[in-house]
Image 1 (tube, rainbow, N blue to C red):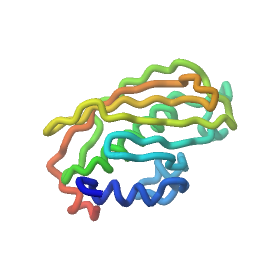
Image 2: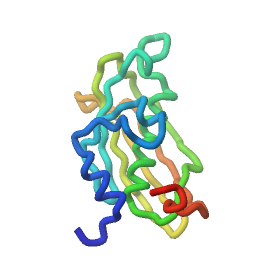
Image 3: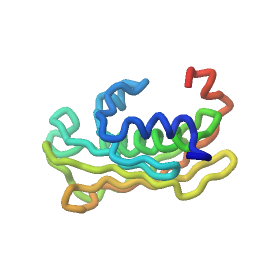
Image 4: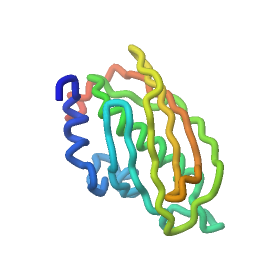
Length: 151
């Protein structure tokens, strides 16, 4: 496809696969499965494990935030910037709980792309469609070229 970044082409090869061989440990620990990815959209599924839960045996808010931040980061990388972009904020609303063993889908959508800043929104939903959490995040372009990092 024309106008498709090499990063997006590589991610498309991972659709249906467990994301446990990424170049960072936090994403590997989450071990989501890539369901969909486009230039401005991504969807990843996760299963809540005991290690992801708080003492009430429900999804820990920090892990929910990590899921959304991770999915936004993957989609932003796949969007094709020549430079590393990093989160400058993550605003999260926790709306309902998810128990150990529940399957979740985390999706993120690019809302605005600028010369130096991309704005994303993400949601976590249960199989039932119930919203667990939502977030917005801004990713800012750094001066680090992805090629200098080996990408």
